[in-house]
Length: 225
Image (cartoon, rainbow, N blue to C red):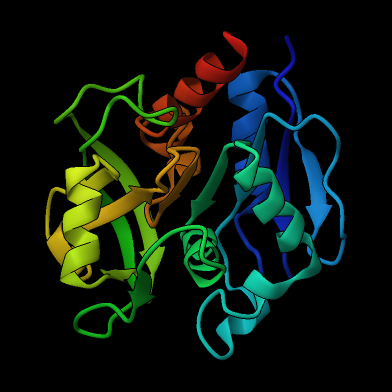
């Protein structure tokens, strides 16, 4: 069965093509490309990706303007119906700004842009997005961000931990994120936001393939490929 996915593009997105290439290479089917100004998504989507970049030049707050783009109302509606949504880097910021995920992404501790490969611990290997990994497994995935310092109040952090909604943690200090959180799930488990870029680590020419498992998890879980 074909994997029917979509990648959203905003003005300033710079990882939308990377995400589209990753989805096609792993699933064998090219995703739909959807512009931020559209108001409707293609029918019958299995998966929606909100990619990284600098939507609207990061004016106001990172992801704040993009979160109010016309297409995001359709993304929110799809997520509420159970369609899986993956937000990476700026996409993670967009998903916190529109309320699909809790918390916020603040300026990195030290105020430096971080661009390198980091160790990432799989905290929850039972989600739709992580089942190809083992719990506690440390993978290597690139990061590239200035505002990836995950913040939430203590009550929210405790709830995320207690409900198994922390999908990934940094295995090393990267940006000052609370409890080293690198990726979180929504309460239904069908929305994942993460700052590292799995789409940049799916083939050996990238220097590693550790990101491939995320896409394999979702494709296997959704269409059984």
